[in-house]
Image 1 (cartoon, rainbow, N blue to C red):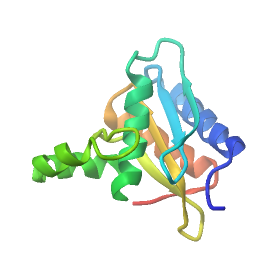
Image 2 (tube, one colour):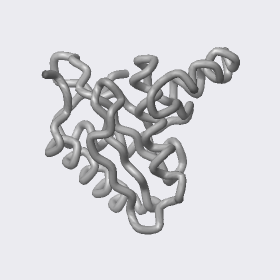
Image 3 (cartoon, rainbow, N blue to C red):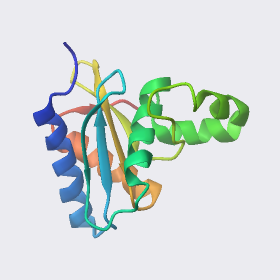
Length: 142
């Protein structure tokens, strides 16, 4: 089966936390979902915002639902707001159209799941997600 294991998911989350610490970011929440948008692993750093779990999960779930980054979902929300508003309630886990949700693939391009990060600026959330995916030996779907 093509999906992230619990060990791999925890490795991604550890890499998010290490990158956030190195960058001096605010406390983050990180969620790893399998290709069906089921939660594999989640951690919320001490002091991370209360909505962090839902935001991180929604970023990852939205990316999986439409096959693009959550940054792209944000762009689509500007281009086609009615579509994103309607689609956001259809998928598992919601859909947060802000940077920080990235689809995780193996080196051959097979989708293994998604990583969602929330707690700092959306740009920083996304940077941590991308750094974590690379550090764990996976590929981010553009």
